[in-house]
Image 1: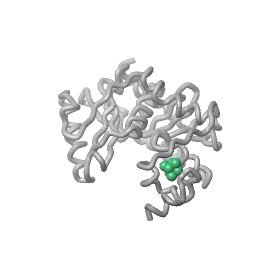
Image 2 (image 1 turned 180 degrees about the vertical axis):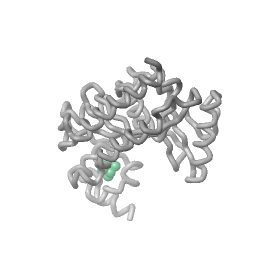
Image 3 (image 1 turned 90 degrees about the vertical axis):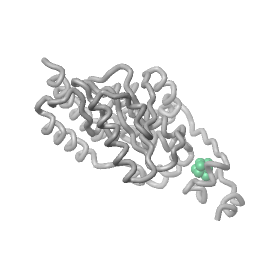
Image 4 (image 1 turned 180 degrees about the horizontal axis):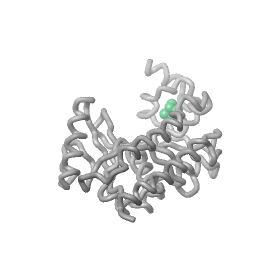
Length: 251
Ligand code: SF4
């Protein structure tokens, strides 16, 4: 079996896993969540109390797109990719599912970079501040873990790419430049606006395990309010950790 056939076969396995994870077969995490998404972990990295408050309000506020649409996205991608691509390097966008140390996770990076039937990198686009925050890294490495633990063949040292743009137009230009550099096998870190990180499974697990422990009930909520965070938190009015006088200061 050639590399591309193996990739397509792995997409079949991915579809089954996506159906199982999305359908709640591995339920339940804290608050009855069927699976975790990188966006939720990124929010948790900002403030765990904020996640807790949102979940107390109702799960639907932060969860989730219909998993049937995600499965359909896999099927659609597979239909398009049924023939081996004429170029050795292509960029695709599909949803992924994985069990990361038994924790069901689901996510869709903005792009996956595929070379000869193996994922060699992933792309996350951020429009806004050009500062790389802890939440950005948690989200990026969460995607890395999902790729690593998913059925799809991937390179050991994945390239995690964060593209920071200041507008949608800027984002389109930077993503196109990145795609072109990848297809031409040029260094991706040299593309303007691209921040490149090398994925390492041990490092990623070390970074994310404190967050995952919360979801499997291995520890209690650990709040870490700070004036800088609380002042821009949309839930500060209802947060018991945010003093009322600080609330009024912000209004
Ligand atoms: S007000 Fe502060 S402690 Fe409370 S949820 Fe927001 S960021 Fe977290």
